[in-house]
Every structure is written in C-alpha cells, then in structure tokens.
Amino acid sequence: MLIAVASKTGLEVDQHFGHAERFLIYDYAGGNSTLLKEVIVDKYCSYDPDHPFRHPQFNAIIAALEGCKAVVTQMIGELPKQELKKVGITPIVTTGLIAEALKLAHDSVCGGGCKGGKRAAGTCQHA
Image 1 (tube, rainbow, N blue to C red):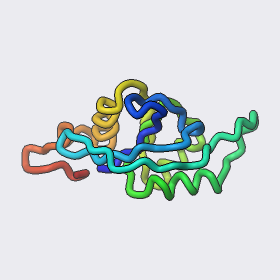
Image 2: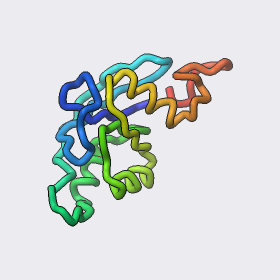
Image 3: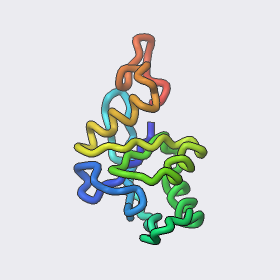
Image 4: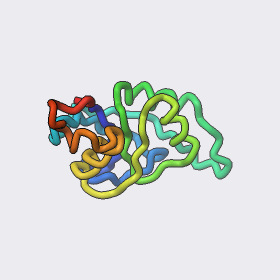
C-alpha cells in the first residue's frame, strides 16, 4: 500500500498538510516499509484567515500523491480532509515516528483485517 507522509525531518510525522512542501511516499506491505520517493509540492496553505479552498494547489498535491491510499500528517483542515476522502485518500492525523505512523495508516485503511500486513489466508489486500 502506498502511503504519503508529511515530514520535515524524514524521521517523524511533524508537518501540517497545508504547510508541507514535500511528501515522502512509502510502500507498506507485510509489516515492512520502503521509502520509494520524495515528491515536492507547493504549499496548500496561503495563510489567509478566510482559508479559501485553493483548487490548483490541492489538485497538484493530489497528482503528486497518485496511487496513495493514505496521507499521514500532523494536522489537516476539515475541507482538505473531506476532499482527500472524495478522491480515495484516507487522511491520518498523528505525530511520532514514521514507522509507527505507517502501521497506523495501513491498519486504518485496511480496518485491521490483515493484522499489519498479513492475513491468515495470505497477504494483505493492500500489498
């Protein structure tokens, strides 16, 4: 399963979705993760107190996250959260080590049915 992570340090989930200038894309399967790439994006947040929805920036982020089933971030606004769900990306809000956040994201999308990457009858449907 492809999972995007908003991180400045590359070690922890420490970035707000709207402030992220990059996302780390991981492949999480069988309880293991592999960093596949880093995608650079324009910040979604404009620091405008009215927070208008910024379609061009949001659409560019969605294109950069192509194939991802989840995006892990320290914080995200309600409107971007809803829009991510509409395109099939589950937003996960958490902090801490990326390795732990990837498991949380996987299990949230999978519903825990494959127990972190392995099912009794085979591999995870998200592999």
